[in-house]
Amino acid sequence: FSIEAKKVGYIVAMAPAESYLDSSSAIIDERRPTNGTAVDCGRRFSLRLDLPPRAWTSSPRASDVDRASVTSAGFSHAGRQCYAYVLARAGVDAFDWISIQLYEAYSPFAHDVHRRGMDAADAIMVRVRSLAEGYTVSELPLLLDNDSFTSTSTSSSSSSPLSKVEYQVKVPPSKLVVGIANGWADGMKFCKVEPSAVRSAYESTLAEYGEGFLGVMFWTIEEEGKDDGDDSSRLTHSLRSEFENIGLQQLSGEL
Image 1: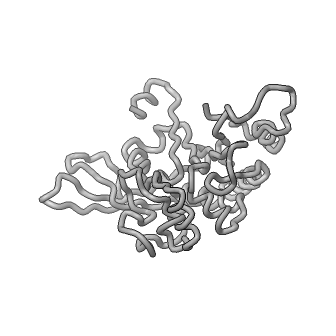
Image 2 (image 1 turned 90 degrees about the vertical axis):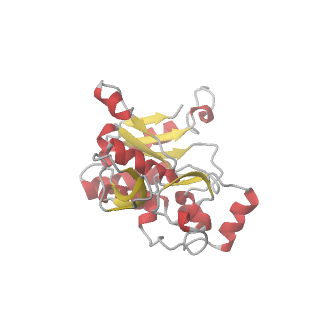
Image 3 (image 1 turned 135 degrees about the vertical axis):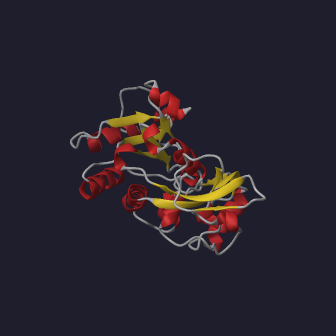
């Protein structure tokens, strides 16, 4: 659908929760998780969307406190690279922009910033670099009669209708939109990001790649408050103040 929509002139976007397209998993070796099963490997594809959040439970960087936080909350709604398959089939050029939802509950980004104490701008740059330079997702399914799938390696079995492939996820800054939360974020389960950190990451992206990331989006317009003339608490106002002199045009709220 994305390919056909693009062909006839529609604007096509992708908005994966971070665990559905987790570029941070490329930074450390997570092919062998310290706790969990094979599906918990950060760079391995899965269709399941009912998994515990990787960074908080099975990553080598997860602590007992992290695991206890997730267990006590009863949270098991994360994925494992499922949108990599969409990119592999459609191609990145089928999308005008790809907005990574860093505000996903118990996201890898939230773990980096709130549990590991990483600077938010640095955490954004980890994702920008990994997407721009490419990271590999393994175990994607491939129909054996499909010749259009891009892969780096394949293995097949005569007893299965599927072959498993690897795919390099690569998204240039010119198509990347950073997704953050506004006033509702609690600063633990849902990550809070200051607009100044987003600007710092934008400037770093511009310096490293010759272009900044495409834009910023947030969830949700409903939490921006009433139009009472006081914009000081609104994320849109803060973002505009940060970016008004450096040319970032894509300031939009997700409806």
